[in-house]
Image (tube, one colour):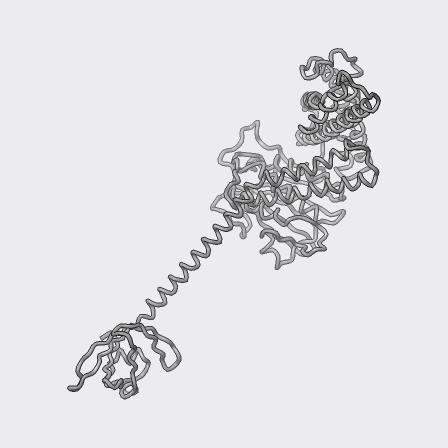
Length: 554
């Protein structure tokens, strides 16, 4: 029989044991016969543990029935080995406990992610209020500030913006984990996305004295399928990290192209080709033991309370998860003390772009801003025409009805000076190869002064913030139209890059002008209130109320 059988007398002594019982107990029949076999109390069926001589434990199912043995009353004990079944049950129970624990953990994590994802408005609103009121104080709306007070307000504003950036990163991660981050998958050029990211980070690199350059293979197939805004976000994060962890006079390089052999460590589906965008630097590098955790949340290369670079440690985590949501990946290779290389892998587009949409031939690595001087020269030649068109459109615009009664000199104001300086900055950018210089610093300082004086002059004319913003929009359109008219004189990617740089300068100038306009209006309103104890027609009060409303809306 497969079951172990032992015959036990009423005195509890074993009288017989079959071969299956010998195997079960790990003893011979001779050693079993004559030994005491305890019968468990409480019934004829039970589960028992049998301990073999070597200490091994075997689970057995025991059944007892009455019988006769050699004409004397006895008990027949059947023992069936159920060790495998018990272990399987225990494993199943353990798996069920682990499943429940994992489900509870996932539910808790999902609840956390959902909570953070819906807290966007509640967290950002008070932070924006802190930043906004700090800016209002800096404008002098609450009264003149001393140099020390202005410095303290500036610190409040900088700290608020830093905190807002950290909150945005946490919320982005929460949206990814909660599955609430939507992507707009489309077809885009790798070269143009690289250019856009580079233009955003280049001023920071120039400030730190770091040489930042780009080079693409020029392959017309370097067209990827993904969310262009999110890809640019990933590249900006990688470039910012590269600049942050690279010493002065170091190198940061952005490369892009198409390959059939992606990095082995990349988690990618089967595909014949992959589009890559690679950011390499000559910075501090990453220790080998940290390479496996660098993409984990809240992990930074330099930890501790005294680390020189701040941040939440979420940028790389979000970047990799965004890359994988688009069907790609983000990998890293690094050597301590010699720099790091991060590579973003993206799916190639299913369709090729048309001839008019094809990427430009290449990005020149040695002169990433080659051709900007041509754009600057074209603005100088078009200066008179730009100002004339600007004044004409301003006179006929419905947003500025009072413009028709103003002289040309009043409408043109500082526009000619601003355009001339903008052209000079573009020329200086190419001549200095994008490196920091006094020419660039002086040019941006002049633009700041011009923008602020322009806003103050418009305030004296009684213009509103809406009118002033409309004016800057008209100027931006006329400048872009002038650049496009002479686009044949511009080489390579300088045309698009020039439009990007000009757009950024105009945006900064518009904000400066609006601040100056608001500040001037508030000062005028305060002067009017102090100069007259009686304001029967309510002119000053109306002006003050309109200004406050405009500030709140802005």
